[in-house]
Image (cartoon, rainbow over the protein chains, first blue to last red):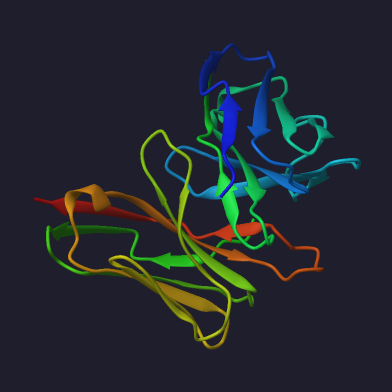
Amino acid sequence: SAVISQKPSRDICQRGTSLTIQCQVDSQVTMMFWYRQQPGQSLTLIATANQGSEATYESGFVIDKFPISRPNLTFSTLTVSNMSPEDSSIYLCSVLGTGNTEAFFGQGTRLTVV
Amino acid sequence: GQQLNQSPQSMFIQEGEDVSMNCTSSSIFNTWLWYKQDPGEGPVLLIALYKAGELTSNGRLTAQFGITRKDSFLNISASIPSDVGIYFCAGQGYAGGTSYGKLTFGQGTILTVHP
């Protein structure tokens, strides 16, 4: 399994500001994914981030709100822009393991917007 | 977005009891995965299923990939207090398809185990 580290683990932010979340993987991976988990809810895919191409966003998520970078095969960032209290969630980075069949998750970033 | 129908939503059981939870979907999935999430942590993979009809065990956990590829169940035998947490099923799309690698999650089952 891949070891995935996210920073920060948690943050409290003022509305209207932006937060960039980092995801570092201990091995090179082709596909990285960003998920959101709203309080008491399940996980919803925000976007797929592949190195060398633009991120692909799921319905309901847009690049202006959630810009993503993928500069190399071990690192990605997700920015939550112009935050509002509705953005308070856990944001999770995920990668596919060797064989590209099993997805592994970071510990998540717990964001609270006040 | 699309979600799997996972049930039950919550379970309160006594230590030593067996637990069963299941997921159903209107879509076919290539892979079914079961995760456990503890408070403040990301989901941890418990079992992965790759073939229709496959029955796989991991210690006290047993999971099956439904024949129709649209459902899966997870059983936990002889539950212990550390089994407490939220269990999620997830379906993964086919390789080469637009859904490849993307996971669709169930709503989760909250498990409470009383000593």
